[in-house]
Image (tube, rainbow, N blue to C red; front, top):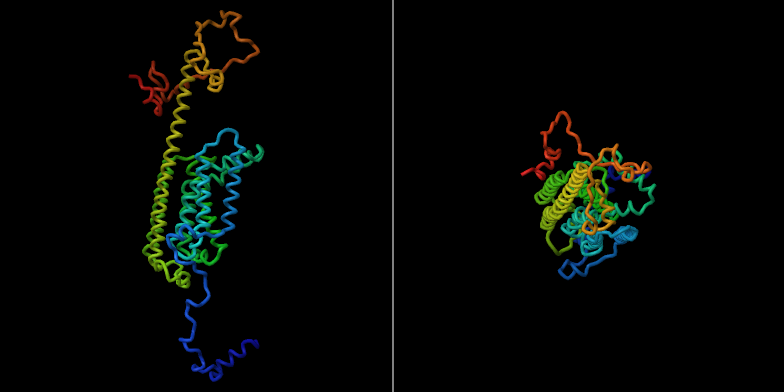
Amino acid sequence: MSAFLPLVTALLHPAALPHPAALPHPATLPHPAALPGPAVPPPLTWLRLLTSWRFAPGVIAAAAVLGGGYGAGVRRWTGPWPRHRTWCFAIGLVLLLLVGCSFVGVYDDTLFWVRALQNITLLMVVPMLLAVGAPLTLLAAGIPPAARARLSRVLHCAPLRWATLPLVVTLLLVVPILALYLSPLYEQTLRSTAVSGVAATVLAASGFVYFWTRFRIDPTPRDGSHLVTLAITIVEMIGDAVLGVVLWLGPLVAAGFYTALNRGWGPDLRTDQLLGAGVLWIGGDVVGLPFIGIVFSRMVREDEDRAREIDAHLDAVEAAAAGVPRIPETLSAAAGSPADQPAPQHPAPQHPDTQHPDTAQPASRPPVPQPTAPQPSASQPTTPGRLWWEDDPQIADRFRRP
């Protein structure tokens, strides 16, 4: 209570308060620019775009761990590893280092548009390139079989299947960037290095989960249609547009922090935020173009694989109908090309009771199972004299009779 006695005395006895003439004159107060504050780097010029660098231990450590693990996985991989995957993963690591150590990392706390460039790269560009590199496939190939089996069970468990629904992963991509710029969290990332690192990690992880589940190059908890992915891309582009419009027309974000910098060079606060809004809006849409190209390429490749499976099945059915056992592709490739092999002989069919004992199959060897054509159900009768695949809705056009 004794600590409050001077305050109570001053309130009860105004004479105890200092006279206004004894207060310092406003002209004698220090200018706000002279007050201690965040360090402001020199003006950003075309030369400093190339010469401004900083040492970021967290970014360098993350790139070293990812690159070292990926390189070890490629060395352990049995067989040739696609070079384009290695190149994509390496380019993703280079971009990660650039956004953390180049001029982007130097000026990310000074200019709004530089921080926007950093965030959109961490959310969209770096994760997309890392996902194309298929790192999870290398990780699964480098662990013991028992651990790989446990990882497969965890990967296909029900919670992860629900968590990787198209709607969920789309929200996982869109919501973090909206929450970052439309809440006080953005200013906290400018004032605290730890908060900035956590936010950058969340953005990169969210982007990787999205591209991992949409590309499906690595094993994923669920399969899906690439057409759904293309539709989701439209939703994501709308999310970028909403954020860009809000920053374009809305109030200044972290105005107190940027005003206290008093940098005295570069664009004013409003122009700086307009440039950042354009980077987030247009940059997100530009990144969507290669994303659509990769998804379309994956869709065409899966259709070709499906067509080859259907052709192989039809070949097996035709061989079974002709009475010729079909040689597996692995055995035929090991034996040589078809041109080097003698023409197959087709003996006349014999009744099992009149088959010559020298040509009969030994009893110790089980009969080779022959593929048979699926029989039509009673609910879907086929026309007499027509083959079963001529009535299949998926492949009827490819084998239609003239």
